[in-house]
Amino acid sequence: MNSLKVIAFTHKSLPLELIGKLHLTQEDQSFILPELKVRFGFTELMFLSTCNRIELLLTSATEINETLVADIALFLNKTLSTEEAQILAQTAAVHQGKLAVEHMLRVASSLDSMVVGEREIITQVRKSYDFSHALGLTGDFLRLLIKQTIITAKEIYTDTDIAKNPVSVASLAYRQLRHLGIKNDARIVFVGSGETNTVLASYFQKHEFSNFTVFNRTQAHAEKLAAILHGKAIDLASIMNFEGGFDVLVVCTSSSQSLITPQVYESLLRNETSKKVIIDLSLPANVDEAVSKNKQVHYIDINSLRAQAEANLQLRRNEIVKCEEIISTKASDFDSLYAERKIELAFGEVPKQVKAIKDLAVNEIFAKEIDLLDLHSKEVLEKVLTYMEKKYNAVAIKTAKEVFLSNK
Image (cartoon, rainbow, N blue to C red; front, top):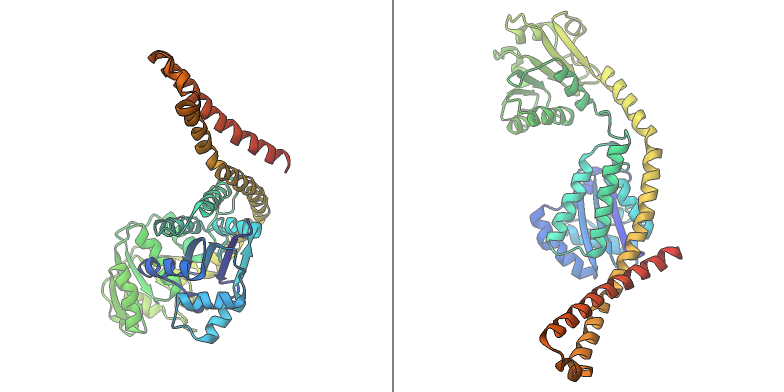
């Protein structure tokens, strides 16, 4: 068990831009990871990469120290500076043995995530394992570990409320919007193309909305988000000239002043009288109070969303104790699974030896006696010996497992 190690570079101790320097595309993984495994003498290897963590799962008798971690980081990205490699080595979390098992169960169950309860991580773990396995990097141990990891995560997501309520303002905003019955052909206008609006845009895209316009002070940034949405990009300075109208207006910028003033709002309306939806995710608010209180506006603001997000997050925190109990049980179960597997592997030679003994008895020791038997008797004898051979192998392994479990 102590051969299992996890080297984790995560958001808990490192800036995301530095973690990102260890990210590998699948194409890069295909030739770098096999070389990494050979270079450092790892028995098994799995590479997990998400937006806020890079983790290496490996089996090796080698002790993991800062020098080795720095060497691994430089192997993953040869353009890293020595200083960057040292920072990564000094701040990486290293888990070993049972602690490494518990760590992986927490990761897949999202207890170690930036946002506790987000289910996406379980898929990322599974896909990372599948890809590493396809490269021939994994073996029996990691196969068992990832299987137990996925089983544990599924049980936690099913039997607890850890993922019950959304905790990001973007997901809450989208949920409120859907409750209003907004159709997929709605005209959606974004003001701002930063991270929050990009995340909210992903919800629209996922649910097949198709009519988008993006305004931003920097045209290139607007074009970047517009390209993702297959929409139009327009300089924010031209917003008063926009004639496309809107059904949903999403505003999130770093401006300290109201951008959607009564004048801008009236210009965007183009004399339409239908009720509009405005989602203002800015701090401070970018929508003028006179607009947000308009009776023809359904206004969704950041403050109410954040209050709901915090309430939902507290509900998730309340479930962590229950999740930890499940993880503790599953980690202990893995000890037994691993031990049983070791017994199976240790007894792997037994069937061969039993078969060799049977063949020796039939073909040499008792060959003359067997030759005196008629064809039917020979067939019956072969069936009896084959039956006893299979049963002996099964009983031997079962007995060894029972002895091990009784001594735990």
